[in-house]
Image 1 (tube, rainbow, N blue to C red):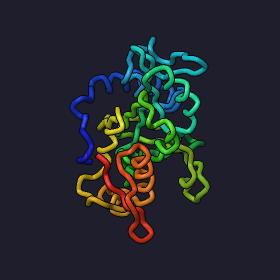
Image 2 (image 1 turned 180 degrees about the horizontal axis):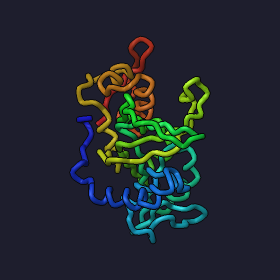
Image 3 (image 1 turned 30 degrees about the vertical axis):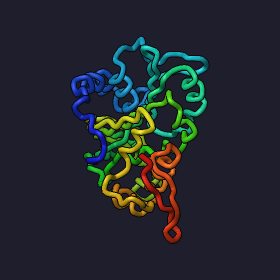
Length: 255
């Protein structure tokens, strides 16, 4: 994704390996995957961004912050941003808050037989993640996106995903339960620290006026996702609607 300001140089791979080792350590391997109550991606990222356990799981008002350090809060949210609304309302009135959202860039699937506990050989998923997928979750906290205390960190990870063979289809894969995800590599971080940072999501090759279809083509994402992205970009003031072309809205970049 060439348009994003790459932060690969700022990624501390040694620290990431240490966080992985701490969470997926020997005890965990011995006891089996998913023995901890906290899911692995969440736990590894929490220890990556704040290795000091005294600054983790800090009670603030009626909530618990994943990380509280030097007057700032970091929340690691792997999905369902709508569940954070009450917490965000409280935290943003007190401190700067960074939401860390992990997205699998490349994923290897491993299927677990519930009865035997046997795991299948890992297979690479054809799906590839990108930072635009974060907008599905951002839409759920749209009302907070203009808050000057809110920052976002989209983290692309390579990971292994363990799923239980308990779905409704004949091969038991459709409708199956995701058991755990194990991060293998931290690939990229995309930061949004102010509203202007949303500009990095607008492909530079777009014409002056463009539709959601044009945007989807330039960003290599489905049109349905492009509509969600443009809804947010319009809300935060990076693009604006300037008319229509047939049944489609026309947009222009503001900055």
